[in-house]
Length: 316
Ligand code: MN
Ligand code: MN
Image (cartoon, rainbow, N blue to C red; front, side):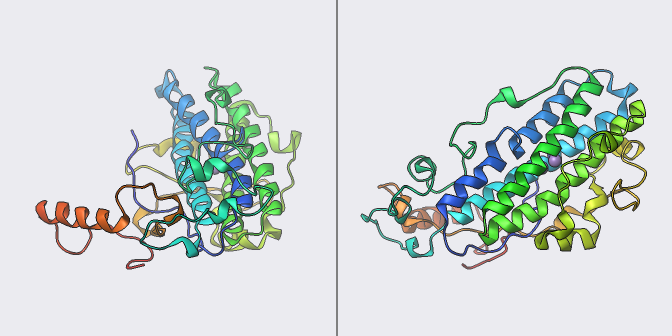
């Protein structure tokens, strides 16, 4: 099972100007064939379907643990898209009968579904607006096939992140891809090491690509300085301890030692609380009415005036 912690894996900038066209591009990192939903659900199904895990525990632990990190990546991609769809001009507590600025600029710059269906929220779709499909999951029942597939999945995912980085200059998209490029690099190395430990074949020598210059990308630098390019974090209070039997040796590009790190997840940054968007608020309750109802429910439940639960920008 998954234990959920209300933190983000890394900080993202607060909302700036909306950019629905670029938000549509970032959707590829959510619901594209090589997006985060794919990595998350590939490793999740492979871990669910893993037989005789006690005989191959380090490999089971590696796949399961990376699956858990990928959930956090989906959350970050969603937060980025939401931030890129947030328009400060739309923050009013009254019913807006104006046409959304999202639909204002001809030709339609973004995905109409973001507005009409999603209420300016991320969708499980790719950059064409097509829904993510379970056909993107490869779980073969064969450990070596799955690990080799995962190496190429991370390789393709990293190319996609680099292309989104180059296509989008929005600060949220840049911060997201700067982080994910580094983490995707670690996962590429992890699956390459897993295959090498199993067979002796070094995939990074057979297929030395893509040569993603993560050290040339400004937004990746703080993570590389911190050592995030050579670390796997363990995403469980007590489990998946044997992954270090597979994720070991040195980083194939930098020669630095690979390590598995236990970190207190409460040290990760708090999520940013985004403001309501008036132009997509359905007729019915206004945000003020919902505030009133929530106040009453909280009081009746005996909660204190101060909300239990934290965000990065309280009182905004
Ligand atoms: Mn990922
Ligand atoms: Mn990954």
